[in-house]
Structures are given as structure tokens and as C-alpha cells.
Length: 188
Image (cartoon, rainbow, N blue to C red):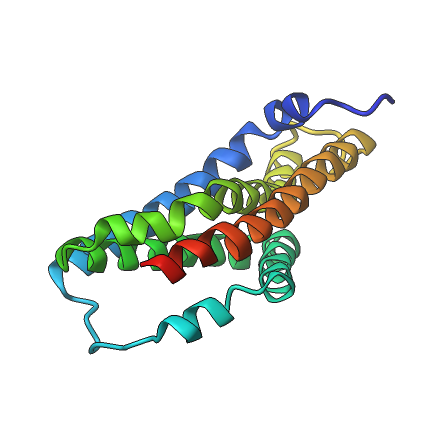
């Protein structure tokens, strides 16, 4: 079997990918709502510029984001529940921060510090979530007798293609976060 293109792998996994994106989006909507209404306000926390930029080191970012990818992927072994929770939580945190930034009049700062690396990290998390949700989706189709087997070689090849894309995006996002976001943070 020839290795499919990334587009073919994404098309073959459209349903779990849509669920992955929707879980993050739902978390984001809830987070923004809580952040804007102030229902999630737990007090003011201050972080110095030195603390913020120290947390933007490449190795730490790679380690953290690779760990998130692994949880998203392996969550499929537990029927996708951990995968959906982590995806929702990711959106929730982003939404809370965006809502809080919007109410304090600093939305542009939030966007300047988030958009450069989130452009790479969010698709990576969506794709890893898609892979983590594929097994539960296949199980459902198998139990409904829409599939002959739970997993086939084609599914594994598509998963490998998607995972290589996800890990490449996380690596790229970590480089952007450690270089671009760190520079932006120092100048703000």
C-alpha cells in the first residue's frame, strides 16, 4: 500500500477531525463566556516578564506539547474520553484568557502573544485528537456492522501520516513560541 498524502489521510478521518475541532471550539465558547461574564474570576495573578519569557524555552515547550499530543492520542484507548476532555480543556483555557483579556481591554496583547504559535499548535492538537478519536469511532462502526474489522492496515498508515504532521506542527509551533512569542513578550 502506497503512503497516502496528508490530504488523503485527513479526508479519510473527517468525522473524528470534526469532533476534535468541535470539542476545542465548544471549550473556547464556554471559556470566553465565563471570562467575559466574570464567572470564572478567581483573583488577579501577576506574572513578571522574566517569568513569562523563562517559560518559553524550546525544550520545555516541546516536552509539554508532545505530552499533550500523547495524551490526546492514547486517550483513544479509553474510548476517547481523555481525548475529548483535553481538547475541551484546551479550548476552555484559551477562551478564558481571551475573555479576560477582552474585558480588561488587552485583547490585542493576548492575540499578539497567542496567534503566532497557536497557528501551528491548534491544528496539531486537532489532528492528534482526531487520531485519538479514530479507535472509538471505528469501534462504533464495527459494532454497528459498518466495518469488517476494528483496525486495518490503511487506518494505521493514515494514523502514522497524521501523527507525523501533528508532531511536525508541534515542533514548528515550539520554535515559533520560543523565538517569536518570546520576543513579542519582551517588547510588550
